[in-house]
Length: 315
Image (tube, rainbow, N blue to C red; front, top):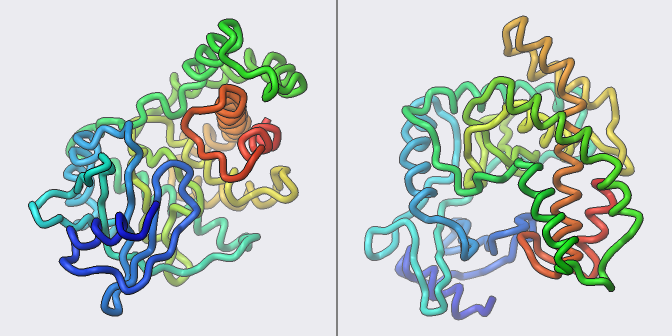
């Protein structure tokens, strides 16, 4: 992404150029930059080309008022010179900007107290989302649909769409050995409680202040789904050591989440969460492997072999 293109986008929202531009590498999909302008910090994003902007704007209108009412912090989009939330440049890039949200910097590994607070915060987030006046329009409707991703994987596998030099027989064996169990777990998840969820509730997308979770970012994945998948996704981001789930850490986060629920829901969380965690990891591993072996897809290849490596770690 060249500097002039970024500066051009900045001018649309701020009527001036950036004093400093830093690339943020956390996102796997959008190109994200931290902009310093006249002593203030902003986030500028070039949104993935296939994203349905109308759905994002509909969801923003749905959750922004509720978040404001309950004091839940979130990215508050700026409008460009034309009064629009999204600016399209000459190359077809769709840009948006919002003020940088200050929050506590959490260092891994999180303490038991921080993990417990994280769990409580996820429950609080779900409680805020439950107040939305309608259902979100999912920009990624198939985000946690393992059956869909497995069907696509089989289509490519059987149709020659996977590049021979990128295939890994060991990983394909793991996929074949685990798919039936994971699809059964997915069926149980879909049959359980559905609500508005974040969809990508990793710790990097959660905002903390004075030991409590106070908001979240990267809300493009907002959708109707299983709250347990948000909790499992969060576990995946902060309860691992050397690639393995740590029971005590997972327990602290789970108990924090359960502390805000009723007795019946608490039992379901404790009984089902580890199975949902396995399904989340398997699903992501399958997606990374499909992208790697097909030579395309959703996830960025941060360096040669990155996607294949991630697939192996997750599977």
